[in-house]
Image (cartoon, rainbow, N blue to C red; front, side, top):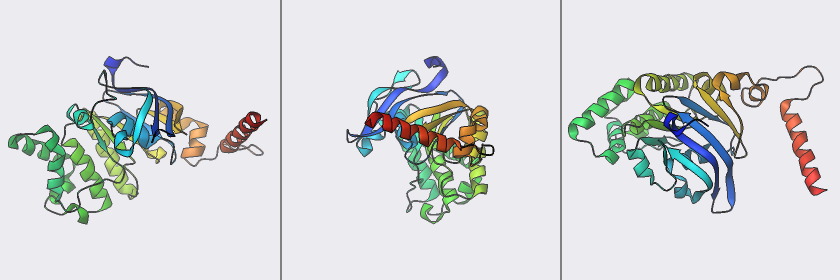
Length: 276
């Protein structure tokens, strides 16, 4: 575990549950260093979204809670801080599915993202110009209703709206979902530019492991609410189990079982030993 002075976000042995009975996280620990891109990998139900919401304070909105462990943002325990407070402190989340205001214009959506900081008119103009510089397409569409823009444009709008609050850490939940490969590549290039030139750190949950590991400085693989693997993006991309389970590459010779079959056999043996 790196020291708090070197990390912008740290989850330490975090357990989380919904309605007090549905366990979603079982001891998740991870760090996001300042100025880095960290990827959360895993299938549906692995705990990626819950991990992000534990970090951003949004679990309570879905009757969830951190039941054990601690969440630290910029060296301070943030478990009991309101999401609004965290946004003001520089932590913003872009939810899965984009969630734009469809009957607002693109520019009105962006302005909504800045209101938590109560900017002056001059500051608001500067923030808008900064977002339009990163997303020229949004500037061309600024008077259009958000509901009539494409999925890729709405994803750009959701990220741009989060940037209006001047985050130091941005949590992205499945930014590639439902988008064409060319648009996804464009969005990840913007993420990289924001990291390198804008000083923004990222924690992103993503099922497109091939793309995520190409851009990530570090990654964590979640399974059943637990961290099963971690390492640099290059290290994880080279792991046989990651290649097979998340990159679609078969890593076995003639007569050898796949990693997933070996894992299934281990689980069956564990279940049989418990029941015997």
